[in-house]
Image 1 (cartoon, rainbow, N blue to C red):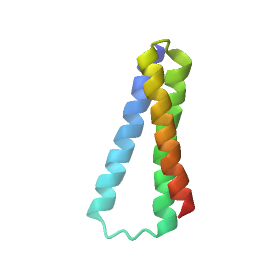
Image 2 (image 1 turned 135 degrees about the vertical axis):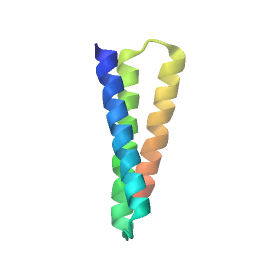
Image 3 (image 1 turned 180 degrees about the horizontal axis):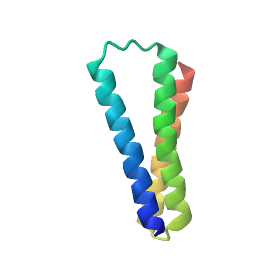
Length: 84
């Protein structure tokens, strides 16, 4: 059940982001740097959250290593976005 909820949540977030990107690409939307940085922070924070869940639930060394790498990489992107 937990895997189903996690997968459903992941699919929802992915679909929402995909629809958002498609909608923004079609419109004449002008975002400033702060808005773009904010979107980058939100998108990367969800990946950090998924990595945290993986680290809490998995005992597989490969999964744990990948989750740690994923969290570190996305934290670095957030730091770059905040620096803007």
